[in-house]
Length: 333
Ligand SMILES: Nc1nnc(-c2c[nH]c3ncc(-c4c[nH]c5ccccc45)cc23)o1
Image 1: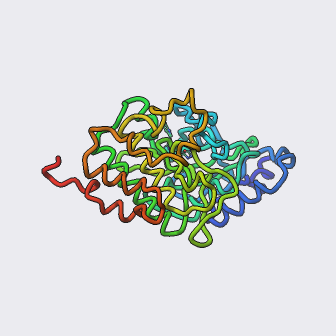
Image 2 (image 1 turned 90 degrees about the horizontal axis):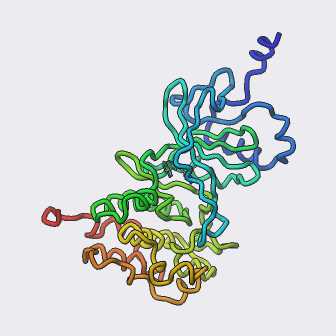
Image 3 (image 1 turned 180 degrees about the vertical axis):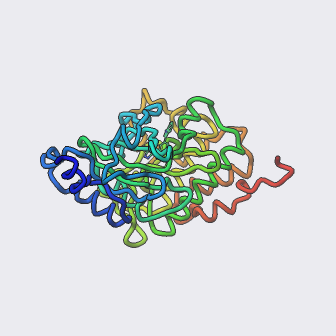
């Protein structure tokens, strides 16, 4: 009997389109978590027919897909991390049929918001971590995404120290292509920093779109402070309206971090003495002093253009991609 009921009542995981997935995540975030308690099995929508195999409406964690905690990338919001960030434990996942390896981000259902997946469901680019599906299981939303098995740029910096210029050029080009695409759709990422850039064998991709917004017109007036302090632009800190150029400034501070091994400001203003950097960012000129001596003149020029205090004067992603620093000629090699 239960075999018949099982076949007649297949599970609640199905293949669908991006809009099916968005309907699902909106349902999950709208119904009270108490009623979720009754659902004894996993439910969700997978976008990717080829790489994830649903069996009779089931895609069971630890059966149809295995999760392995990576170096747990979940860090409680540290100093300078405004608690608005979307955080979640990221695991390595592997489909047991196809052996396809993915990233799986676990977000407690009470912390989950549709914004966590909207951008990745609706916009696709090779430098944005692709979304494969969303599953609800044991009060936790499981987001399956493209995996950067090389880890994040922050892990690379923590384990190998400052990066060499040719590595920084490669990462900057990848990030700028992703930003050029997002900005062309008036999308602001809001949290560009080393831990949100993950590495693969042939590319780097942006991750963590929980703070992302799509502007209605050419300025976004925030209700709250979004991002991580050391990488924030002066106009974002001022909270009087900003646009996509704030991501360009954050890329500039990220390049300083890749070059020197530390975020800007922290060596001159130690965290122990400065619990917050917002005032420093607001009052001080851009952190050009944190650019190491070893920086090439071309890269220094790129940083001056990326860190310009005036957003209108600051370069766009397209302009930075055309800078000499990102096209080292033969003799520079
Ligand atoms: N916050 C967030 N939202 N989405 C992601 C994400 C999508 N695909 C990924 N692939 C790899 C990693 C990752 C980060 N640190 C690591 C250290 C070792 C190995 C892997 C990693 C993270 C992701 O991360």
